[in-house]
Image 1 (tube, rainbow, N blue to C red):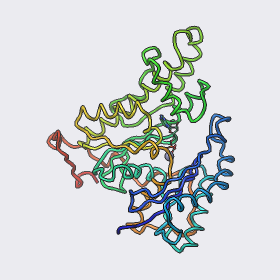
Image 2 (image 1 turned 90 degrees about the vertical axis):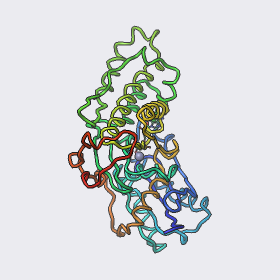
Image 3 (image 1 turned 60 degrees about the vertical axis):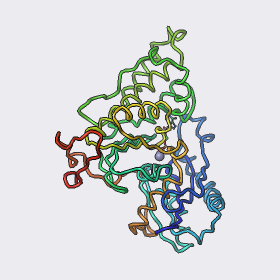
Length: 365
Ligand code: KG4
Ligand code: ZN
């Protein structure tokens, strides 16, 4: 199955994106129309404005993706589209448009789970990433830790019990009056701050669980900002950003690396918008190297939402002939096909051979 051309369309939230990807990893075009200008004045996404902007943008964005790839609609083998989860009005635009394209070109339609798209994004920049691996999906809507035994199969080890890490970054920037989206702003600001000047407790650092919780640190920031008024001359916004970011990053790194050592897996991937965070990338790499673990992550451009990751995930479905019918509906909520962590046994001591990739598919189903 070579030279398979898949168009990926992503409209689950506030970015209209389309890309053409060959054979699941080779990006021929990658077009994205952001809506940041529309939503920034509101400090967050306004769903109705997002759907209207997608309606105006989806055709030119898809057109540009085909143009940049130097192909015609008739050259495509399939069209893959984010089916959910996300904002239902936004998803409807992408799904309806993809259906029309698939019908017109008489090619298969593939419905992609948004998280499966993020998980597949790692193949775009590192097609050789080995399986099994541990995957941290960390975005504005999710903070999930998976064991990925093979491409297209995911076992959930832990997830956020409340807010996603990206949401915690966005809310912090809003509280500090810094704008939207908050993640990149906090990331930049933190580089000139001292985290020791504004220390935050580690959110939900329990060693017994791979779950996360980021709602408490948001509240801690609110109290900090209320009480810090008197000494704002010694604690800068940059210090606050650095302290806040450091607490979130530390927990993400600790739990991800612990999952890898616990299941004796030598490869870790991190994907999703927050995986573009410079401190997370640096600290995860340092911690991974210390344990002899290889870290893989997409280029920052492929961490945040994009069409190429949807096409990459679509390629796996295409190979397995998992096609959607033309009456397929988008969904606002819903998990990726996973197995529960309780069905994934922790390797016993005798299985735990440091420096060697040991995985027992027969015991891990
Ligand atoms: O994956 P994504 O584009 O959309 C979702 O699926 O949610 O992720 C968006 C999230 C936002 O919360 C944004 O603030 C965050 O990713 N983000 C970052 C950075 N770049 C984007 N968070 C921290 N540091 C960054 N550099
Ligand atoms: Zn996303």
